[in-house]
Image (cartoon, rainbow, N blue to C red; front, side, top):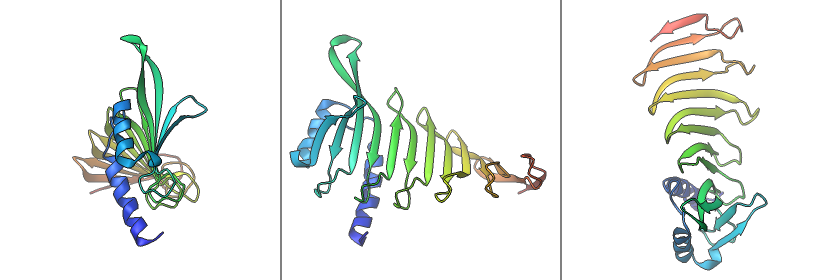
Length: 202
């Protein structure tokens, strides 16, 4: 990947992740985006699941780098009308055909999960989980094994606990606890029973 494309990839992730769940949430918004990009860089179709898929080629290279998936249903207030709900957003930040950002939305149009390919190698490195739009958990993935190596837990957006599987046996063997974002103690499981048997105050 050349330097220009790398810079574009970073800018694209930053910009489009800031769009939030309401971007292109309606036909009017979609038409506005189509007008801004040009018809040659916008397409809309249905996939096998019946979802409406909007594809955006923001660089004009012929490859869609932003895909938005919508589910359609009858408007409860007027069944003769069809309403759309954004259920998934995918971004190919560096134009290599691999998705680097994948957002899943809940029925209230807030992000439920987000998968990130941070180093743009085509593999998910980080998975974020949200509740009511607030971050509750962050999983750091070991891309060689595909397992969760570290899990960070949050309350009201503040880090409260870190769990790690340091010996790669799929069991937590290291813990960190935080108060008001400050590390207060850490524990280790040294005998493999799944329980911390040594603690250290910080």
